[in-house]
Amino acid sequence: MNVAERDLFDVNQLINLFDVEKLAAERMTPMAYEYVASGAADEFTLRWNRQALDALRLNTRVLVDVSRIDTRVSLFGLDLAHPILIAPTAYHKTMHPEGELATARGAGAAEALYVVSSFTTTPLRDIASVATQPLWFQLYVSDDRERTKALVQEAEAQGCQALCVTVDTPVAGVRNRQQRVNFAMPEGIQTPHMADAFALTKSLTWNDVDWLQSFTKIPVLLKGILHPDDAELAVQAGVSGIVVSNHGGRNLDTVPATIEALPRIAERVNKRVPILMDGGIRRGTDVVKAIAMGANAVLVGKPICFGLACGGAAGVAKVLTIIRTELELAMALTGKATLSDIDQSVIWR
Image (cartoon, rainbow, N blue to C red; front, side, top):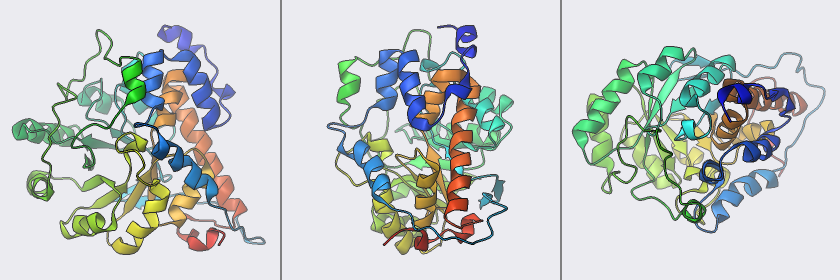
């Protein structure tokens, strides 16, 4: 399917983020779909991310003035229109011919911050040239420290305003579904900033976090924190933020859902640094639940990839618009006019 044929798709057919995945499955190659949709091993954690969010019930209040809903949030000096960020995901050209350029344009149309993956299939400079909303960069630290330092400096030079360092992947998880389709990069698609998916460091430690912070000029967030003790060590290490993440259920299977880990981490951190959460976010009500449990913002990954596959930039923008609209409705229906109004009282006990 070429770009013109994809552009004929009417993204208004996309009603919710579950519909997006169903339609994307019909439009993606089996290999690309399995890469995006799959989790690790038996996929318990992948399922638990959703099930744990579904299990939380909302506690509504009535007769509150919700005539004006305000979803604005400030993160590291950035004033964002809403707390829904694009999570870093790899290989966008396997999902749409325009790849990360379309993702960046969709982010711009939907007023969303885009966290670009180290495994982008488009050079950072090209993404930055079309971006109209803030960019962050997700970093895998390789054993080649000079290459890593050069990549961080390239991200800074291209205007990325924060660095999300993935800390939960010293090795890749068991990816059986990817194995079954013999996942490999299609001919002609490259990852210009990462030569080898298996060249990741196996020895990333707190010393490396200190090393990164010794030269980077932008805030550092650690992505992949699930244990409160690690959250405490992160704060003590002076990082600017934490991303509570189980890698979308793609690494170690049977670790808890992120929404279950979040409140323990939020209690330990006690608002000393911002906390973000990813994993299973599909509804505006999920965003309310994450904020109620201590997150400042959320990241959405798989649905962005599916929206990209359905309609390029327009598909990405539609996914973000759907969940932002649902967030606004959920806030109104729970009697919360601003994000700061959302606290644990919104969760039914």
